[in-house]
Image 1 (cartoon, one colour):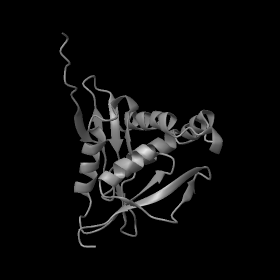
Image 2 (tube, helix red, strand yellow):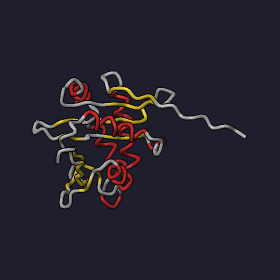
Image 3 (cartoon, one colour):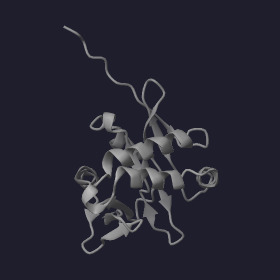
Image 4 (cartoon, one colour):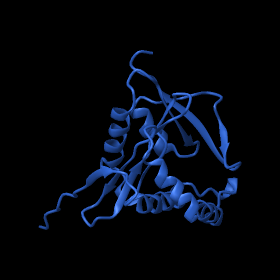
Length: 177
């Protein structure tokens, strides 16, 4: 009988050295998760949008954001050194805390990576204040994950991301609310 080897994951801060690999993984997650032909969210539309957000200028801006005191980030690596997860929480000028992005390579869903990334987000945030996020309304897996972490959907908060992808706001109340 073949013995299964436990998967090994490493978590580290998001840095200018690993941000490009993290962004590549996030872009692939968009293709794996958001295609919805009914709504016109096609693979071609996602690829085109991702190319527009991958210019040298936008990549440099993203790297510069990493040094801000109002943002953080972590990446997960598999034992081959590939980025397989990432998150990038931030605080707006209005003081509102945001999960930002949280993506895990679909090959690693259900392995605890998203949970570890979310734990880091929550630990980084001020526990007295609420944390907000926007999630694609047809991404039931993500919404269920966020509910496990105490986030609740806000009725009437639906918006369109990039005038195409329906999103809903979810909030996790702070400890003093």
